[in-house]
Length: 74
Image 1 (cartoon, one colour):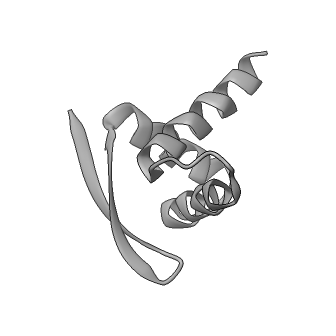
Image 2 (image 1 turned 60 degrees about the horizontal axis):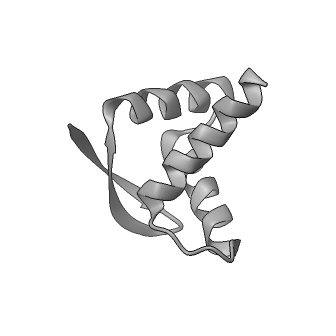
């Protein structure tokens, strides 16, 4: 089931719907990096904006998390 949260990213309000496991992973990484959840997601959003591949924010967050954990596992 999706959990929807509201965030302020780059000065504007938005909402993001992700499964609980993704919210938990984002929270863990934000704590490890001593960042707010909104700041971490804003950084992912900035990376997505620079990419040639256009995707929605939720997809970009899922891919970023997958890549992050795949790199750790390798």
